[in-house]
Image (cartoon, rainbow, N blue to C red; front, side, top):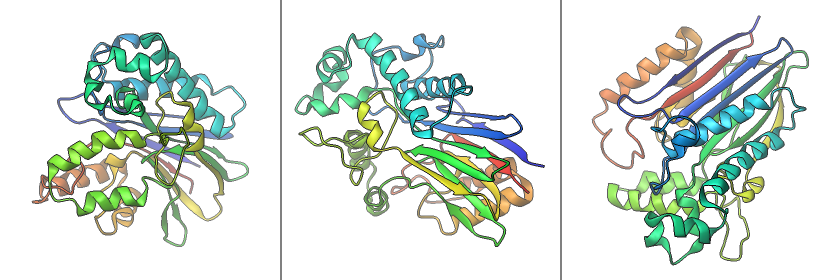
Amino acid sequence: MVRLESICEGVAGRINEDALFYANDGRFITMAVIDGVTDRVVSCRNWGALDGDIDLTGAAFAASVVRDSIISLLNESWVMNNVLLSCNRRLRMFARDVYGDFTPQAIFEAEPGLAPYADDPRYFRLVLPACVVTIARVDLQQRLLDYAHVGDTELIVFTQDGRVESITQTIPPHWEKGLINAQDADPIIRKNKRRGLLHNYTDPQGNTDPNIGIGVLNGMEELADYVQTNQISLDGVTDVILCSDGFLLPPEAPNRLSLMAEWVDQQGIQAYLQHLRTIEQHDSERKHYPRPKIHDDATAIHLRLS
């Protein structure tokens, strides 16, 4: 007997920019966790109006569109890579409708906030609604899991011998190193805006480089070079978790995965998240960089296989 539980908790006083979806048809369990990417440059366009909610940020809009796109594909023949690319095309369609064309020129002309970045047309992506996502489909009969992934959402498994493993590669190591070594908030804020260039990164000649960039769903066709896909066996696996980065302690925290696994295994994801918030509240360094965030939307799906 499998068990599923989920949580999608936003930050009080602001729009939740995460989303999730799961379904169980008896043979396959399909799961997705989506984390909207905080707007690098605030668009002057009302993305929420396209989704019937005028209060949506670009990040929340992207997460909503991708979730709904995944749901619409449930009855299709699933190729994991193609699912993410289809969701990405949906975002591209919305952006083209808003700007009249999906080109740097059209987007720069429509977005005054991009003026400081006019020296490089690649910075048009700073204003695009974007999200990261991990999707997984579990074959209960074959005990196999297929996944597709971009960004810093995570797929984590617990095993019978006590191991806790993150299956997905998240942000490039040099990103984390830069954040951990930083001592001042302002340079990080400026760098984070410029780092928007690394979303589906292309060099000045238009070439992608997964060793430099990070994949996001933002309508850019270059996403195809950043999607991670794989199939893993679930033999010896007891639990599967899909989560956004806000569900975990910061990368520099010791034993963050084993701590999460212990709480989730014994008390469930709601109790774990309450424990995480307590840790945050009593952390005297929580307002000091290199912490990239103090408190973030937290989303997770927990599948217990045995």
